[in-house]
Amino acid sequence: QVLVLSGENGKAKSQTPLPSVFLSPIRPDIVNFVHTNVNKNRRQAHSVSKHAGEQTSAESWGTGRAVARIPRVSGSGTHRSGQAAFGNMCRKGRMSHPLQTWRRWHRKVNLKQRMSHPLQTWRRWHRKVNLK
Image 1 (cartoon, helix red, strand yellow):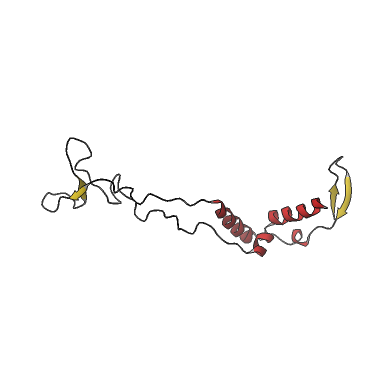
Image 2 (spheres, rainbow, N blue to C red):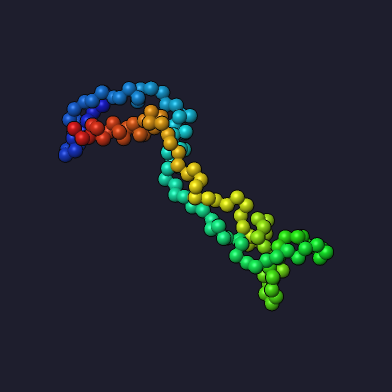
Protein backbone atom coordinates (compact mmCIF):
# COMPACT_ATOMS: atom_id res chain seq x y z
CA GLN A 1 0.00 0.00 0.00
CA VAL A 2 1.10 3.55 -0.79
CA LEU A 3 -0.17 6.68 0.91
CA VAL A 4 -1.63 9.34 -1.40
CA LEU A 5 -0.97 12.78 0.06
CA SER A 6 -3.24 15.80 -0.25
CA GLY A 7 -1.86 18.68 -2.31
CA GLU A 8 -3.26 21.34 0.01
CA ASN A 9 -2.12 20.35 3.49
CA GLY A 10 0.26 17.42 2.80
CA LYS A 11 -1.70 14.96 4.95
CA ALA A 12 -2.58 11.42 3.88
CA LYS A 13 -5.78 11.34 1.82
CA SER A 14 -6.06 7.67 0.86
CA GLN A 15 -4.13 4.48 0.14
CA THR A 16 -3.42 2.84 -3.20
CA PRO A 17 -1.92 -0.60 -3.90
CA LEU A 18 1.69 -0.57 -5.08
CA PRO A 19 2.05 -1.68 -8.72
CA SER A 20 3.50 -5.17 -9.12
CA VAL A 21 6.41 -3.87 -11.20
CA PHE A 22 7.94 -2.35 -8.05
CA LEU A 23 7.96 -5.73 -6.34
CA SER A 24 9.84 -7.48 -9.15
CA PRO A 25 13.66 -7.44 -9.09
CA ILE A 26 15.42 -4.75 -11.13
CA ARG A 27 17.27 -6.06 -14.18
CA PRO A 28 20.40 -3.91 -14.59
CA ASP A 29 20.98 -5.19 -18.13
CA ILE A 30 17.51 -4.06 -19.29
CA VAL A 31 17.79 -0.74 -17.43
CA ASN A 32 21.16 -0.08 -19.09
CA PHE A 33 19.93 -1.07 -22.56
CA VAL A 34 16.77 1.06 -22.34
CA HIS A 35 18.58 4.05 -20.83
CA THR A 36 21.31 3.96 -23.48
CA ASN A 37 18.98 3.62 -26.45
CA VAL A 38 16.26 6.03 -25.32
CA ASN A 39 18.91 8.72 -24.73
CA LYS A 40 20.03 8.37 -28.35
CA ASN A 41 16.66 9.79 -29.43
CA ARG A 42 17.66 13.26 -28.24
CA ARG A 43 20.49 13.51 -30.74
CA GLN A 44 20.32 15.77 -33.77
CA ALA A 45 21.87 14.81 -37.08
CA HIS A 46 25.05 16.65 -38.03
CA SER A 47 27.67 16.19 -40.69
CA VAL A 48 30.71 17.66 -42.40
CA SER A 49 30.40 19.77 -45.54
CA LYS A 50 30.97 17.66 -48.64
CA HIS A 51 33.44 20.30 -49.92
CA ALA A 52 35.47 20.48 -46.69
CA GLY A 53 39.19 19.86 -47.17
CA GLU A 54 38.98 19.99 -50.97
CA GLN A 55 38.60 23.73 -51.54
CA THR A 56 42.10 24.38 -52.77
CA SER A 57 43.81 24.05 -56.14
CA ALA A 58 46.31 21.27 -55.69
CA GLU A 59 48.03 18.93 -58.08
CA SER A 60 50.53 16.14 -57.62
CA TRP A 61 54.15 16.93 -58.45
CA GLY A 62 54.56 13.39 -59.76
CA THR A 63 57.71 11.32 -59.28
CA GLY A 64 61.31 12.45 -59.32
CA ARG A 65 61.19 15.15 -56.64
CA ALA A 66 61.88 12.95 -53.61
CA VAL A 67 58.51 13.81 -52.03
CA ALA A 68 55.30 11.83 -51.63
CA ARG A 69 52.95 11.79 -54.62
CA ILE A 70 50.13 13.45 -52.65
CA PRO A 71 48.62 16.56 -54.32
CA ARG A 72 50.36 19.79 -53.30
CA VAL A 73 48.98 23.33 -53.15
CA SER A 74 50.09 25.42 -56.11
CA GLY A 75 51.35 28.99 -56.01
CA SER A 76 54.18 30.80 -54.29
CA GLY A 77 54.72 33.58 -51.79
CA THR A 78 52.76 31.92 -48.98
CA HIS A 79 53.42 29.22 -46.42
CA ARG A 80 50.56 27.16 -47.82
CA SER A 81 52.12 26.67 -51.26
CA GLY A 82 53.82 23.32 -51.63
CA GLN A 83 51.98 21.80 -48.66
CA ALA A 84 50.17 18.51 -49.11
CA ALA A 85 46.40 18.74 -49.62
CA PHE A 86 43.19 16.69 -50.00
CA GLY A 87 44.36 13.55 -48.21
CA ASN A 88 42.89 12.42 -44.92
CA MET A 89 46.39 12.25 -43.46
CA CYS A 90 47.18 15.85 -44.45
CA ARG A 91 46.78 18.95 -42.33
CA LYS A 92 43.66 20.83 -43.54
CA GLY A 93 42.73 17.81 -45.68
CA ARG A 94 39.34 16.09 -45.76
CA MET A 95 38.21 13.46 -43.28
CA SER A 96 38.22 9.83 -44.22
CA HIS A 97 34.65 8.51 -43.95
CA PRO A 98 33.09 11.84 -42.89
CA LEU A 99 29.93 12.05 -40.79
CA GLN A 100 26.72 11.85 -42.83
CA THR A 101 23.27 13.09 -41.92
CA TRP A 102 21.70 9.80 -42.97
CA ARG A 103 23.42 7.89 -40.20
CA ARG A 104 21.05 5.96 -37.92
CA TRP A 105 20.91 8.43 -35.04
CA HIS A 106 17.75 7.22 -33.25
CA ARG A 107 16.84 3.85 -31.81
CA LYS A 108 13.48 2.15 -31.38
CA VAL A 109 12.99 0.50 -27.99
CA ASN A 110 10.12 -1.91 -27.37
CA LEU A 111 7.30 -0.46 -25.29
CA LYS A 112 7.37 -3.29 -22.74
CA GLN A 113 11.09 -2.81 -22.25
CA ARG A 114 10.64 0.93 -21.82
CA MET A 115 7.86 0.39 -19.31
CA SER A 116 9.95 -2.13 -17.37
CA HIS A 117 12.40 0.68 -16.71
CA PRO A 118 11.42 1.66 -13.12
CA LEU A 119 11.53 5.44 -13.56
CA GLN A 120 9.35 5.33 -16.67
CA THR A 121 6.84 3.10 -14.93
CA TRP A 122 6.79 5.33 -11.87
CA ARG A 123 6.12 8.45 -13.96
CA ARG A 124 3.31 6.81 -15.87
CA TRP A 125 1.64 5.40 -12.73
CA HIS A 126 2.16 8.65 -10.82
CA ARG A 127 0.40 10.61 -13.58
CA LYS A 128 -2.63 8.31 -13.43
CA VAL A 129 -2.93 8.58 -9.64
CA ASN A 130 -2.63 12.37 -9.64
CA LEU A 131 -5.26 12.82 -12.35
CA LYS A 132 -7.98 11.25 -10.15
